[in-house]
Image (tube, rainbow, N blue to C red; front, side, top):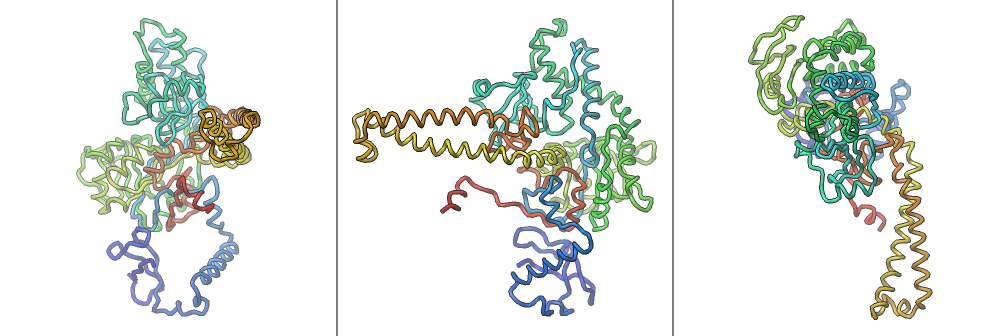
Length: 559
């Protein structure tokens, strides 16, 4: 039974478990922040609460559901089973979280990918043109790539791997490779993200413009269109050139200046998002903004995205107990850097050695944040869109709880539902082939033993007429070949409702998870499509991880 701690003034109806009096519940979660009822008032003696707890729980749940319906408040279950659900990989009691930190770009604000990444691509290509590269006739095509793919800088390929690192699909330049080509090229090696000199993981939507530009330039390199005076380029050198061109687009400031001048063209507004954060703040959470963007860009974009949706003349700064710009993540989570306090609206800064609540800072470190707030480790939840910079490093180095924002989940969720009929038919065909294959294998073994002058599995099989046995094997073999002819194109098309080239974001093949999904499960305690989804879950949510299936589960269940 979950432990209970009364920490209220005498006579109060409710109390909240304080940080100094919390315990650990049966799922290993802190009870800090849990709401308790004062049993001295005798409410537990009411007739409606007597009897077997299972029956009492059903009755009270039904009563609460009826009350919510009467009040017009959506059923909490409806949020879970929707494209805007929050999905849990590791149990998380949101009540025990003291502070919630947020990234900004693609987290607190979502950019229109075609607009933002399209302009980044344009600036990148213009810089490549100025460097002497042939870019005429090329256009931004976001359908070429999806998040979670990996660039092979040695071979000029873009690949998709499963959770074990086996490469399932690949594209050279902008040409998809056949299954045979993928097997011949990668059949004997595993993707290893630790080898950064070769592999580049597309962690975020910010990677889209770079990947599209690189794959298109691989085509130009293969065609011999790149001038010899640019040097003896190979695929790895070409990747560096594209990266340099895109880096210049960001550093020179033209891209961000354009976005700041017309944010409405690049940012998709979300009126619910500021309200979700307001609920968290009013529930006692200390909110932090930790972004790599500079002060001027952060202030301009947050004003545009937040101020008009906040009540009572609030501004975006009122939501946050601490704002840190130019954070230099992932180093922000790994080591200490000098911290500066931003002291004027023009961005004037002065050195400081300790952060204070309500402050606006540049640089610093996560450890400074912990020390200034007096909270550490799993008392802090950090929310971001970058699997490495935001989620992995905050968990590995600080043991913060983590949430990943992946906007594509909404499209993937809908595509999975749309694909159910196709997948059911495909699974049925594969199961048919498995049954036929098992029968075929037994008859083949019988023929093999007889050919070698040994008895088959049974006396009847040993005495079976040779012609009858051979004909049975032939028929089953033809059936399997015809099943394969139907299965292969259906398997290739699986996931095309999400992306025609790469299939689903979270899957690699019919049965397995993608490498991206494995990273999400390993480092993100919860994941969802947008921050405003918290609005439908309340700041008091207890997220439960689902049971993990094992290969033998279906067989033991059948028995």
